[in-house]
Image (cartoon, rainbow, N blue to C red):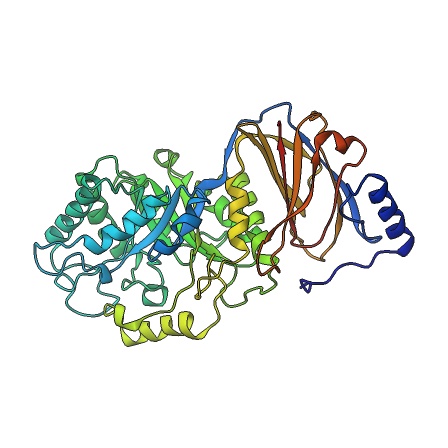
Length: 476
């Protein structure tokens, strides 16, 4: 892995010549290409639209405890934010008694960001599940369970805290190790799912229902018993299915692409499921082998988002918004073993997951999502990209916006990149670099000038591994 502060050596004669060129063009050229960098040219065609693009459907989770970051999250324009409905909300303290106040605060915070919730149902009220055991997955009264869910759905709708998606449990194949007090096998998940989905749809016929939020997703060549059973069950018309969901933590973007393709292929076995959405609603780099180079994670987000779009993933939820410390007193629904597992993950091991760390400090990945959120409107063609250097381009409300990055496939290579806008002759531009090493001002303005100046001094950057650049053109 590249040390983040390293820069490639440049041969002296080329550096001098490049510096003279920069002076000649009144300081217009910000970078000098390294002698051993590979040269490439990106050409953005602003004359024709390739349809619409909006990357904000590749959004966020977990939405609990985000109140202090609402202004920052608004800037990311997330379409959805996933969160866990657990028993600390105390929704059903006694038979036929409901308590919504704590839940409503979370729903209101999510709506304040402009997002709709993906509601992951993991509740296990003690009056319906008196014994603490992750393998006990059926309530002592299905009638009461369904009534609870009907009241919950109606309450959300009547309170104008509408839920975008209702997800039936979390990491059903992992149980307490995944933070959920349920551990299913395929047969009992189908029973549980059918009762739960039926109750949700009875309360709201238009509600979107799905699952199973697998910890171990649809990997090619491997069976996925619960997912396969759910697809077959719903494909035969035994229960509604609006989306399937799963999780993946890995450092290899190609694996994400493979699992998306596999999920779509499994759904394609049934004509009735052709419109079912695919949601990767927990994803990040590897938990056991995280890459701590600060340049890596923002570029990883860019690379995976590019893969999500190309492979047709419906939605995603980057896990998570903020790192937090685990409080065992808030999880009486977990066994001592389950508490110990979560305590070790969140309180002992260093975590590099959140857009904000445990002390509330912003991580560079936040700015990757900020840049991606601005890629909306008309999709523009970008010629010259390759396996490692990729990008997005869009036009919206008079602005042309481009983001591009270098994500190595194997050996880390540096590229000398020239970016051209042949059809643009007027207006102004800014070239911005995402600097993950900066304590403040992570978005650095590298160059700003009139578009006409690009005729004599085109945009050049030396693009190191995992670097990200952003260009914005204005017609003014």
